[in-house]
Length: 409
Image 1 (cartoon, helix red, strand yellow):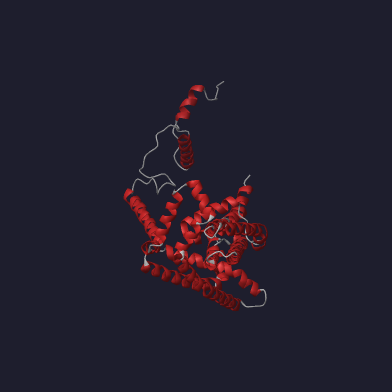
Image 2 (cartoon, rainbow, N blue to C red; image 1 turned 60 degrees about the vertical axis):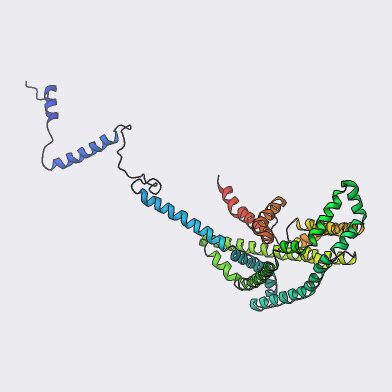
């Protein structure tokens, strides 16, 4: 019997035969491509990558070695643009201060305008009423204060020798002389000779011409601020709407609520600071008047300006006014110091909570830091606006940043 099954020796030649040509070749070709891809997939991992001169994807700007000139040109132009913007900001710093001051003035007057609006007064008429009342009050204060202020400044320099002579006869001067020796008399004589020399006074004021230029610049700046604040106050609702449209539509309601809260808080804070400073000036004026201390109008104006500084303004004025009152005598100076210290406690625990009830509360450390930073950068204006800016930043952190961090698990 013949065995027809394939033998082991015949299997190898048959398997080694090439694939048949024809239609079946396409299928074989497909299988060959698959085999080739599998061979590529199992290629050794430590094979050296082929360098083509192109930067990796995602790093074409910083690491593109094909165009170093273009990269250097872009970086140079960016640096020049940054320098130009910095110089422009520096040259326009005065205008920027005017704009910021006018914006904060508009935010400070906006609560009064909205209060009139709640009493059936249209916003244009409310703005007219507010600015008319402000102009009347300002004119009355200037007419009341400026003549007395000029008179008292002149009297201060004319009566300075007699004031120093009275001071040298006082018990306080005797105590200073007994404690510190003859140096007190030498210092007092040097101060008197310096202040009574007109050349030194002109040098302090920068000269008559510079003083006149400074006065003219101040008046023009106040006019610019008043005009800008009028426009800002009239267009404040439209400005809020335009600002909120920069936010995505899904977050627009929350942004509008935060904007209203920030502007209301800033307006309440600024209005409260002006009210508290006015109360300080009235108390200082009447204390100087009733105690017979010199220059009550001048000290009232000084109290208004100094107590606008948050948190430490009242303390600074208390120290300054008490020191000046010592030139009259230690008894009126002591009485003034005690009464004004009592008023400071009344202001801190009674007036401030009532006036600032709608403003955002800021920790005391941040108040001091903000006032110092703002005062260093922009003077009195910076110290005045530093606290509402700090409060706005705190509000944004509490309502935007912290919720995002709490949502991360």
